Image (cartoon, rainbow, N blue to C red; front, top):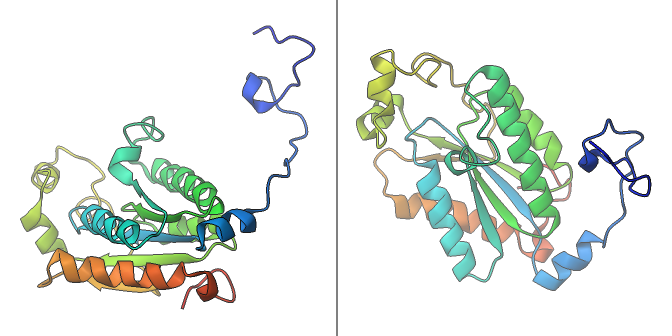
Length: 222
């Protein structure tokens, strides 16, 4: 690759990076004040078929209707683009979480309430996502749906294929799911409709994103 001498050798040129500089940008607080809200990252975790994507989409609609600037990062959608090169090994799952968390952090820095819907089965990976969030309020949301109910729903037919041995490393069947030990919010879906579950999430996010409601420590919202 030929790079003109006038172009600095940054990571974007494809050349090995030298010292990497963090460029100062507009203060994020100015953006937040303009939006009239503070950002929150809500990280929805649970088994496949637990209802994460449905809850995220419904909560997002409620937030927008309530005047919030919000967005959803859905795990399936991300695997069509940003994470299309990743498989489902523990290492690839960790990278899936890391990339998603970095994007969520960038969006939150711009003032957005970000709802992440990602199985993210390993506690260590979810802990990394919280660390990446830094001082952005981070809400770990456990979408608690029993495995049997997820299998009964099986909207994509994945459990049937996993039981037949046609999907190796499938979370809950041939790969572990490590449930959160101390989630910031648990939404038990069994016996409840989508509406009440989504309202529990959106109500918490509406409160946390009010400018005066930012958690004091910036990491574990109350």
